[in-house]
Image 1 (tube, rainbow, N blue to C red):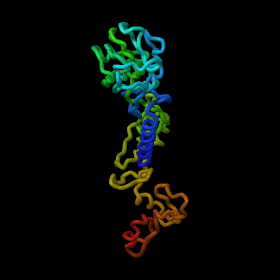
Image 2 (image 1 turned 45 degrees about the horizontal axis):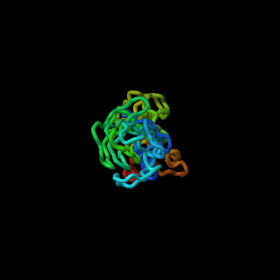
Image 3 (image 1 turned 45 degrees about the vertical axis):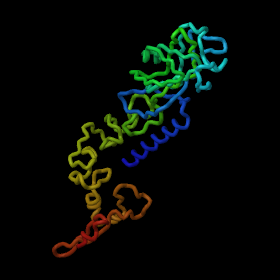
Length: 309
């Protein structure tokens, strides 16, 4: 289990570093599924495509994409190829911004250029749309929270119809599921709305990392002696829940005892984690005092002193 926890930490850190380094996600992402635990990261991004119902030559919708490149003084127009505006100041127009990644939206930040008045804002994707503001926004720069029941990859702004509303850029922030290789950790790592798929070798619908018998089908997960190894694969029933056991459910005493006094006792590797050592030193041969003499026995090395007396 320590290895599984370490893998989870490593995966999380690698995703976080990627997001911090690049900010704007250019690679493929997947939609968030709120019913399934997923690897989510926070990102902020600017539109990479835009269209408008009205636009001026030199102030087309494309100039509202990318990062802001105008100053923050909306009393002075920055000039052509800096921002979008409609054909005339008294035109009610819609600007639609498309974003590279679909996110569970948290907020948007509007960056204006000149004479701002936004009266309606929608967020949407290819299927759903939701109005998130209706009123009048005249600030040159403003941030507003978004709460939508679907992932967002599009923002639509509507002008008031009595101002230029030259728009420099709009940032969209939220959470995104970043796909990675699926590992056994109870999380949808590859963002396909499934958890730990392909990681159930005995096909009992319990992922290997949570299965108390990963090699033996046991949907009930019965564990009579509560040692963490299921009854279906426990070779040493009756071990204490307080004792450490190997993959077969045997504590160190139960493991050593069957070897009696043969050389196999010296070669016995309790957890199978010392294959290169000739003598793993898990078990040793001792002479137990018995009435009328001594009896050889295979016991845990750590208990050989007590057993020999």
